[in-house]
Amino acid sequence: MEDKKGFTTTILHSDRLLKPEFGALHQPVHTSVTWGFDDVQGLVNVFQNKAKGYAYSRQGNPTTTALEHKITQMEQGKSTVTFSTGMAAITATIQSLIKAGDHIIASSYLFGNSRSIMQTFMDLGLSFSFVDATSADNIKAAFQENTRMVFVETIANPATQIADLTAIGDFCAEKGLLYVVDNTMTSPYLFRPATVKASLVINSLTKYIGGHGDALGGSVTDTGNFDWTTFPNIAAILREQIKPEMLGITQIRKRGLRDGGGTLSPEAAHTISLGSETLALRLEKACYNANKLANYLENHDMVSKVYYPGLKSHPQHQLAADLFKLNGGLMSFSLKDGIDCFAFLNRLKLVVKSSNLGDTRTLAIPVAHTIFFELGAVRRAEMGIPDSMVRLSVGIEDTEDLIADFSQALEASK
Ligand SMILES: *Cc1c(COP(=O)(O)O)cnc(C)c1O
Image 1 (tube, rainbow, N blue to C red):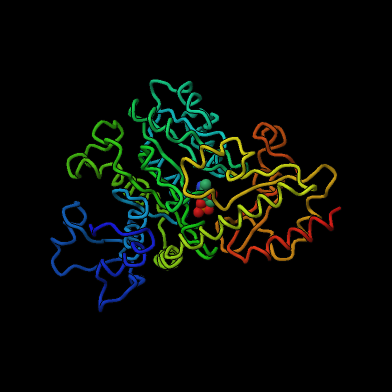
Image 2 (cartoon, rainbow, N blue to C red):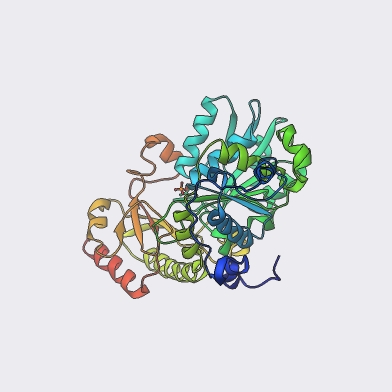
């Protein structure tokens, strides 16, 4: 590996240093589905994991490999596999590493579709405990002899609860549990889960890493922290062929990506790769805007509550300061009783009513009626989600323009 450079320098020069043809600065978009070999032994060697190379691009191609290399460097991990979406990455990770009879402990504040796929896995016979991950004690209390994996997010969406990441990592290390951290909300620029002993890191590349709302993608990175030789669910055939530190990621690539088929297209990999060059610059501005906006909203008499880790009023404000470089671009707020949340949202002129997050543009969505609608009123109340809650993914617009848009929409709601 190259000597260590800063975050952005490393991403900008990553493709070039892999030496694509003619001195290109970007890895080309390789659209070939398959590769030809002059000597059939070459094809056989790729199949038998004896040589690096490509046979069929469901398992990867040079364009996705270049992006995987970038993400590995961002996370300072060992190896990365990319997928068509973040959900494909999460599904493949569980599917490829967990067996019937195993138990998983997961945060009760998960991204809605992650919670939903875990319900599907429960219907298939896996067992799960969902606990409040803001305290590692709840994880410890849910531990069973058959627990294999702990799955948490860094900052939860929409209410921004922060998992007790360091203490959970210590517990997982002590018990030999796979510790999977979904880093989507922070991205490797704000936080590296490897530093709290995470085994695997999930990123939805659709969000901050791609960053422009123009390509879907997901990834799983092995941090190198986990000892796969002790993990009982690794296939015997892989143990014979693969170096111990590559066992986990290889099983995810084969059973999760190759067999599951959620492959990232080379065109999307290229788009995400370009977006990732400005990850640090975009996040600096988005976090700056989010902080300004959170303080503005918290002091506004039409707003009843703001959920943002950068505010002193946030229950894990100090934890966020200890763990993350900045407090992120995601926040939520609820309006004072009697204010019509839809009418307020419709008055916003600049802010887009949309469900994505991590875009360059500021996006707003009413939570109870959309992303948490399927949960029903009882589960929403348990999760602390009021009907007037609005989630904001703060973009990189000029700060004054954002404040002005919220200001006119709130004044007109009086
Ligand atoms: C969006 C998101 C996902 C899923 O990613 P997709 O690329 O949309 O499939 C997973 N986890 C978190 C925390 C997310 O915000």
